[in-house]
Image 1 (tube, protein in one colour):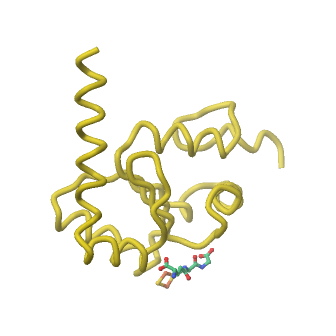
Image 2 (tube, protein in one colour):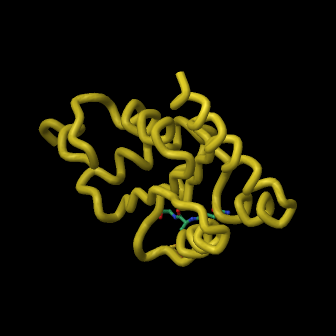
Amino acid sequence: MGNSTSSFWGKSTTTPVNQIQETISNNCVVIFSKTSCSYCSMAKKIFHDMNVNYKAVELDMLEYGNQFQDALHKMTGERTVPRIFVNGRFIGGAADTHRLHKEGKLLPLVHQCYLKKKQEERH
Ligand SMILES: N[C@@H](CCC(=O)N[C@@H](CS)C(=O)NCC(=O)O)C(=O)O
Ligand code: FES
């Protein structure tokens, strides 16, 4: 399979797990998704409707998307999509995210991340 880690988003020589960790620490909301998946669209809509920016990584558009799903499996216990991270932490799939939103817990998690970033900027 050759150099399997070199052709991903943001070319890198690190492992998929490391690239995922980097992405989730640089973005308050990251949705690992597939373009063909309506659960994924539903999850994106939750953030869209709250006016929250998110980074979507479309695994079906990546040559080695399967390896990212394997890495997500290692990190979260499932390789299904969507896999959603807020403030550097895995919060779950589409159903979990919907539940957090309904309980009013999703936006506070996003705000915690924004506050953290602001504080980091001041240092
Ligand atoms: N309960 C999960 C369901 C996730 C799920 O079943 N995802 C399907 C697509 S809708 C999946 O990832 N299938 C395997 C794959 O696409 O690799 C959630 O709410 O996120
Ligand atoms: S809803 Fe069918 S692939 Fe996700």
